[in-house]
Length: 404
View (cartoon, rainbow, N blue to C red):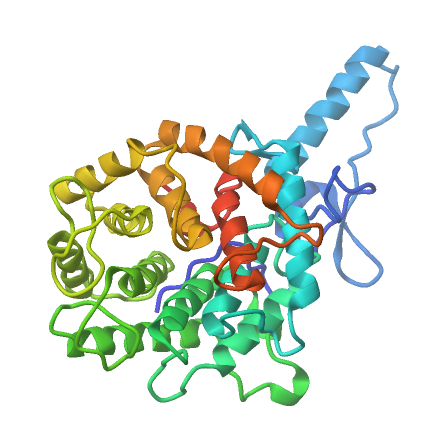
């Protein structure tokens, strides 16, 4: 099992703090293993960063000293991997986006149960996976930041929901798909050596083990299905493009994280989506064929093709064209669910189209966010809030599944 390391520190590492946090951040940290010549040993044995002190010479002019300080700070940011709160990969993130997101996060923190679940609406490991991804996408360090404990509560809940023998994340394949996706995004990012409290250590599974079991359950279910896809039950013999989307994105995220997923499994599911996509880019719901207009289904299919790296398919080009020609068309049924997939599909397929659509998304969310920070739709406030924030989180691009 190959493990990706997106932020796990070596055993003896400690966070290093600036005297003053960066604006908008509770703490700024770096791996002390990068310190080298600028670190000294603290009394407690941990590394502490101190500025190298040159021999006193005649002081440089004030302007040069300021420039040197700025250059040193920028160098530290580059070494530490820190970011200002409103920039990412060279692009500016508007302050109002951050404010909407943070209000939504505060709502989710206030409604998370002690066992790590979210119970408003469709409670289960899938909804917990959504909430977990919102916290991971926030930019706060998952091991030392503000959301360290809520992240671990959500992970424990998802893992405890899993059947230890079959790997199934109960109680539907929707929950299994989103729960598996949450595990994949946490794997290699969250240091799970301290995931379980002292009285449960040795009893709970690691993130990696739980993710491997979830992948195995997904593949076992697919092998039973004559269509090579999924529906609500792990033993289903029919399929639909909505449940299969949750399963496929979860599997592809697990594969990106280093978990083995057979090519044959991806190929079978892609073939199912090809059979469900018309020449005009419309995507059917269940069975085979039965095409119909749906932004949600077309967004799901487009995202599946893109993340599976099948952009050469005519079905992908047709479905992407369908979406980009309807940027101003409002989502109808389950709009929060639709926008969650639409944001990713457009971003993966056509960044300029996504930027236009994203501007309207931001304005919509600003106008429709409730005073408590939530969003209210047909799936319950917890799920609808998480899906809305995850659509907005493309502006940060901190989740591995959002990489192009």
